[in-house]
Length: 253
Image: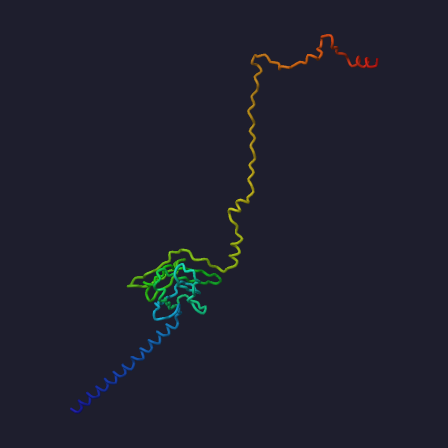
């Protein structure tokens, strides 16, 4: 009997020791998980001002480009856009960022997200009109579909997307060589007006010649000539036609 009690007590003590060890291990796992979450949060960029009223969205840059500027403000706002990337930081591709949407901006229906990317010396600007501030999930991806900026997220196992209506990126290049070549290009209408005139050689057309009919059997009609009555008429006795020698002899006499 004493031996059975001893075995029971030993088993009970072993069970208590095992339970104590497993309970001591749990806090260590929780601590490791909290540390990992803190490290991931510190690695993300911060866009905007963090506050209790601000809406937080974790955006992942999947544009394939390096983003150097991010702004979120009402569409058509005349004020200069505020770059949410502070301290001239860059948002590398595949990196996450915490976007904080201010309380006043959450009431705006036509927010516009504008990003500027840089590739070497070339900079490009893309716009996303009607940013889905009310429907966007806590995690979303920022992508480029050609030249169209989109934001996508998963909701109920389905991918939701918000696409800008603008299909053309804004003006953008700092390449001085390309700018110089553009200024030298002339207006095609001016070039056309300065072309030399085209000379068209005139074509001579010979008129049709009609030979007069001389065998028509009619008498020729002499033209009317008016004769001065004071002039002497040959054969009337007053006009004699002499030779040059006679005139010479008369002059000598």
